[in-house]
Image (cartoon, rainbow, N blue to C red; front, side, top):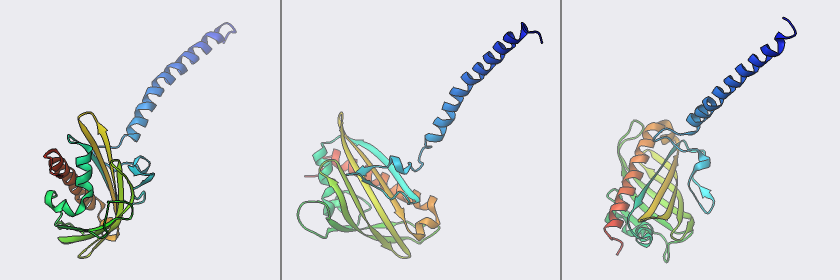
Length: 217
């Protein structure tokens, strides 16, 4: 190759490399976006979990679900419904019994015992869960985090549940996330996650219906 031809060749190589780079950048962005965006219904990454006073759900739990809804009612109404646990059976279809184990305002260390049915699944038969929940973190009208065991026939679950309440135009954004761990739920994560998701979606529907009907009074 002549000396006069080398610069031209170098320019062609540089232009080719530049074109390749321009194509590669958006392609890489698209791939990264696909990797970071969870598919519908997928469990969120632990780092994105809901928190209350800096504490979230169990980052090691394999069974987890998160959901949210906007409720067109005052925050005070929603908060009262959620924290007056002894009245849960009056508006939650699946809560059969509920009792406070302490007295006074709903606060950190408040405990309550409640029962709810669980349908049969490939890992366990139909049963009723006896749940004892203890409030670990709470911020009035903002968030609640409680933990506790749920025990049924052939079933033991350790649960962590976080609720967030945020005022938005026309109402309140209610977000919730829960994790379950235990040998029975870990034995069939998809089935356990489906049961958990059905429970949380039903809870939000009932909370929305009760709050919008003004049933906290």
